[in-house]
Amino acid sequence: MNNDRIESSADQLKTSLNAKIYHLNALRDALRHHDDLTIYQSINAERFNSIMQPKKPVDDKYDVSLIVSDIQPELSHYLSDQLIDYLGMEFPFFYYNEYENGRFRMYFGNWWDHKLFGELDVLNVRFEFNDVELNKLGQSFKLEAENKTYYSDDIMEITNESQKLQTLIDSKTDRDAIKSQLKVAIRENESGFTMPWDAAKVKEEHTSLTDQYKQLVAEDDQAAAGAKQIKKNESKILELNKEDTIISYEKQSIRDKFQNFGRFMEVQSNLYYDYMQYLATHKGGSHDEG
Image (cartoon, rainbow, N blue to C red):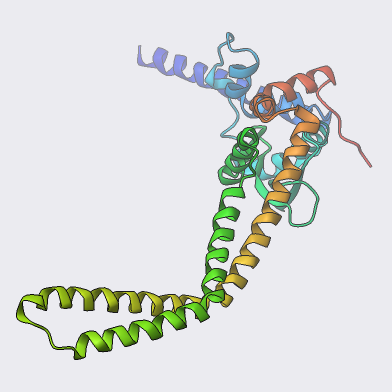
């Protein structure tokens, strides 16, 4: 009885191993024939089926993803060739840099100071976006309804601060005159004879005069540092204007290809399916040999 169970277990193991060997051979043949579609199906059958043929169950014994896990960088490097060619047609504004074998940084645009927009996950055929930059781009589209740019409110706030500082700088002569008057009033308040029943009123008047004087001194201090701060603000505004300009390039690139941000997000979310369909219609894809 035990021998029968052992024999049955051995048969099941042989079947599973043979299945994996078969699919590893299929993967090897797909590499030989530059059949990227079959490669994707082989290295992650579960993902492939869940997206491309969700009603078809996947048996674990056909899953070779763990077996090839140690060569994922090499597979990613190989598969990137055809994928990046495809992405060049569908997302022409993204550019890629392989900073490690099989790992790709993704940049938006080829203009000066373009942004790192995320990474390209070749094996899963998806963009891993820089959420900050993606959200910034999406928000900039929404702000168009208010005739605003992403940084227009920030620029306005900084501009207003600079204008207030400039007003403080320009009004120094007026403040000096008022301070002189206040000094005289404070001296008179402090030196005059006060009847006991007027003491509270005189003290209140003294407090008001000194508070006004202190406020003017504080404004003098602000004005003294104002020129330097205005310079800083000018630099910050230039920086934000440059950022808005880059975002405008990004928005125009989206419009040229997808008309709007929503359509762009929809298409990129279906990237795996669309690319597998592309490979299917192009007989699995092809790699130039040379």
